[in-house]
Length: 130
Image 1 (cartoon, rainbow, N blue to C red):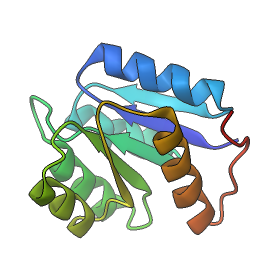
Image 2: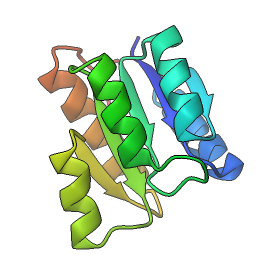
Image 3: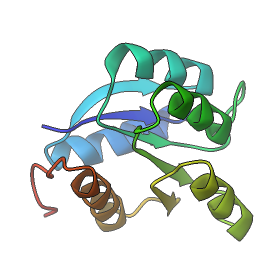
Image 4: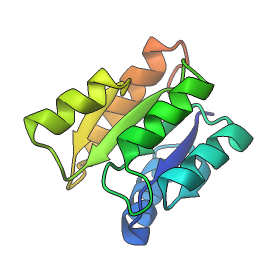
């Protein structure tokens, strides 16, 4: 079962994404409300994949992603952000994101991105989207 960490400063977004992922058979390894917390929890929990918001109060998601990738260059991170302008997407991919999902989140898009990233890494998805 793939273990996913959700990073978003908005509690309601973490709850929505957590429910969405659990419904599709994924385990939630951790939830973080900030970039600093994400780095710490990644080191402790070693999730299979991370969903990361960009805009957060203490450290933005791209900076947190760079720190996580310094610790683990193979880290699989998908950016989920309302900042979907072209430069945000380019910055995310250039800094190691495996995909970029624009908010508001659509289940099918979330599931397909996660399944593709896990499949590329050799971690087969548990359940196909319903």
